[in-house]
Image (tube, rainbow, N blue to C red):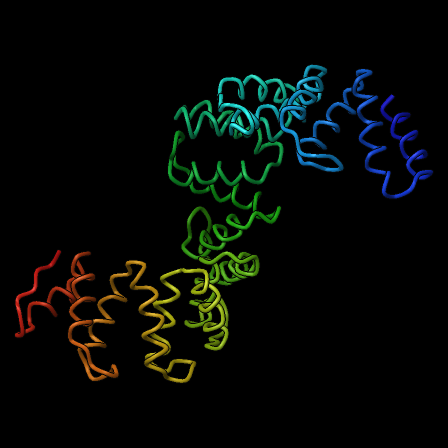
Amino acid sequence: MRFLFLLIVFLLVGCVSPERNQDFAIESYRKAAEQGDADAQYTLATLYDFGIGTLKNSDVAIKWYRKAAAQGIADAQYKLGSIYDYGLGVPENRQEALTWYYLAAEQDHVDALYAIGMIFHSTRKNYPEAIYWIRKAADKGLDEAQYDMARMLTFGVGIAEDKVQAFAWYMKAAEQGHVASLFYVGSAYDFGQGVAANKVNAFDWYQKAANEGHAKAQFYLASMYELGEGTKINKAKAISWYLKAAEQGLSDAQYSLGVMFEQGDGVVKSMSEAITWYTAAAKQGDAESQYVLGSIYESDNSDPQNPHIAEMWYLEAAAQGHQQALEALMRSPTELRTVH
């Protein structure tokens, strides 16, 4: 029936003008849906849900999702679960969400399996039940579920800590291109967590994650280029990757750029550029950057020298327990300072 319906629509749409195609398709789906075609009901719900070829209408979408779900369309059951899970056009109702997720899960709908696990994990703190459902989704190849299994095994959340198994799950997700997992596979090789340390392998996996825009991977890749770990020293590439991570707001990368510009390491020495990057990191609360800024403004390395700004940054660092900043404040003969 579904094939015959689509064939009729395909043949008839080709006979009408392009501007009428969408209206014709909507009407054709509606007629089939009203005659009880479950696939047409689900498709019509989707069109109203996303406003494709018609005005977006959540109430009408839910009506047709319900009809399709009642006929066993797993995607419709999962969609209704999501609607109640997140309160999309209806009051949020996790119990109602679970009802629909369970129906889809009975048909091995992988996203429904994972969604059930996440409800038990994030809202009910029932970790054994969460792991049961997340594991089912992971076994069926859902990369996000595989990543979550790895994280729980890494930190022993609801399950015994096992870094070897965690690495195996990271690898499964990474092989599907899951970006965070690409990074954590690199990290595992870098620090020997769940697998033998291998800097070359770490470099390769960091590179994959960095190419996908993962800021921490970009930072670690830059560090490996800077230090020659897993690859040859290449300060230009180190600077390039630090910049990518720093521009995403990673304070460690901002601090590293400050150091390289201050020292002229692989780049033209520039105190103003160093101050720019130290300041970016310091404003995010990086204590070392705050201390370094204090020392720069206290010395004749800044133009102009500014003891008041120096004091401000020393105070910020000292408030975080930075020992050298505390010592800098204590040795100043000018005025009493209160560390807050």
